[in-house]
Length: 323
Picture 1 (cartoon, rainbow, N blue to C red):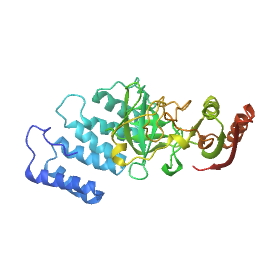
Picture 2: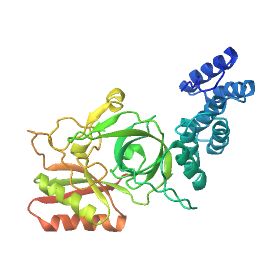
Picture 3: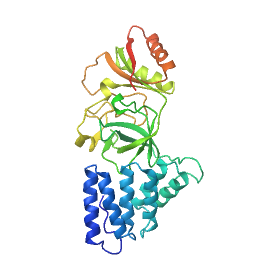
Picture 4: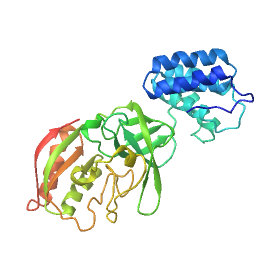
């Protein structure tokens, strides 16, 4: 994060010392003290784009989006380099948080991306599937989602209730990936860290105990929920605890042929339909803990319909809203 060497003249020793100390304080969570030092650095060398870029970073960490936008714009006004500067990416994140869509489009274009046509509405881009780490500073959980634009992901897995997040929510995420997830076909997907909730979901998360005689019975519930426009996920086999080091590295997903997987990795990233949850040779346990994302008026009907299709091999009990 210590951005030196982009200006034509070497920064002064006092500027470097203040900036170095500020980022040490940021690492310790002492944002107020760091802010005083970065303001001092900006006063010392206000013509240097890094002075304002570093302040914009601090305001991003604090989720002070008005200040992040203001200082970010000062940073890009002083740039002397080609498109692709990270200063523009930070402006794009701040503009997205504030729903300043004209500025967001301008920022992504300046960075070198191609957002949708100019307009007053939200930016929409087809960026495919990715993974996002929810609550990265707490009980972090990696889930799959769909990238709406460079700074937003729609969550398509069903997060565990400890994350405080729901299926269908849109989260603002940072620009630098921390880790990757690799699928069986060799494709890799970045894992971005959530910054904050951008748009909540009205769909609650339910925990239910299933009796599913076979994997096909479990899969039928997941497909039934998907066909209704919602989701179900077998938490008994889709959740795996990882240390932070493993979570932030490249981890394989489970497509039924790999014995290693991370929380909520799915064979088809971003598509919560059929999941290949069982690794080779594992014995099937009929009792499953399942997460369901569905409205209160629909969830019992989904479960009853699932049982009615094969009453000899399916049952459910202990339905509870958990998030």
